[in-house]
Image 1 (cartoon, helix red, strand yellow):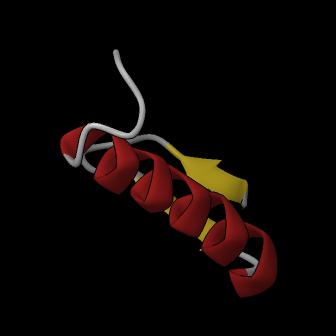
Image 2 (tube, rainbow, N blue to C red):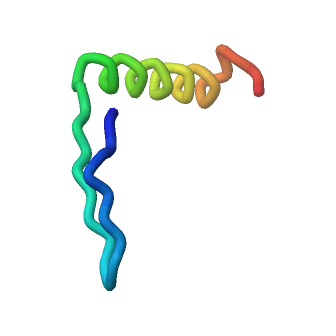
Length: 44
């Protein structure tokens, strides 16, 4: 994810660009780990 074109004033304006492959893979890994913890396969 990239952020740029940040402008401050009475309000904050910015542009964000993300890549679904990288973000999706990382998000899926976190979700999978949370499910495994919830089901008791992994202990906190």
